[in-house]
Length: 443
Image (cartoon, rainbow, N blue to C red; front, side):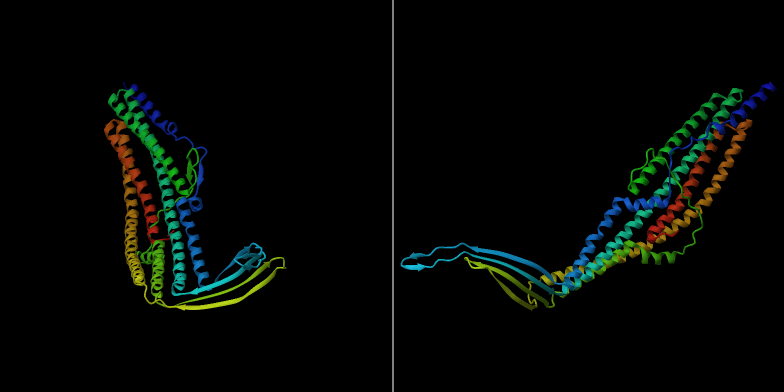
């Protein structure tokens, strides 16, 4: 009986020792290494939403150029015309002789300049410049948002891979428990219930591993969608960057001040408020007189009958006029009221946005502080759970513990491991959320 017991424990220990070699994860082949900088660069070049925002600058720039040219330069154009009258023979009509008329042709060409100076044309330049500034701020806001999206998805991929690596470790531990239960059953130290319980636990671990690997592939697809390029096939991508966990040293008041000064969405609203202010000035300027000036010259070629053609030059003509509107059925009042309403609405929107920036920065700061402190708690939990699993495994090995105790400890250790991974990456995502609220990168 004693010999049988010794042989049984030799078998148990041999099977347990072989687990580490049997459960090594398969090597990843044909993997693409991707840095965060490369991901951000690709997204800036290819992301459709960002490129659409970028293209919106061209109309705003042309509008500003048009407003400047309208204010400082005249318009000019060329005009031309052709007139022909056929020849007619002489006739007698009711005793009167109608003389013959020769064939007549006239070709005219001219050059015309015109210029108009008014209050709206002056205000349009300021409004167009402000609109271009707003378009630039929109581009900055879109780039900041895209950067945060890519950075967050990059972190999601790192998190998914860490969870998949943990799932491999969990499968190893579950196989370890199953081998131990089978070995003890082989020497008559437990029942088939222990073996079947361990088999179910191993199956659950296998399913969790498959789901974790699927999640890695999904995060790769999401990242490449943000980058605006097709994902590699198969989607085996290794993020090459890592992010250290360090204590946040920023100051909340300083971050709020930076957000109010740098948040691109807020800056775009301020630029549009300046444009609306110019719109109000344009509406008021319609009560002022406007100045118009024009200049014309031309040249004609005249051919009459069989005589040689001759040329006639039209002298330069100049015209200057001043107009002052008196009564326009209240249209100016309506335009002024509408412009004032838009100006005031944007002021209130800016005020609301400033309050939103303050709230977003403060909330993100609190979230970052909590996320950082949570890491230490979850790390201690993970260490305690791993120690409890080691003790439960040893107790079951020597026969003083049950399979239920062992499997419960393994699930607790698995949960603690996932919680620690989530705490670490929630910390990094909290920094990304803070960067989005502030409007610039912080590390």
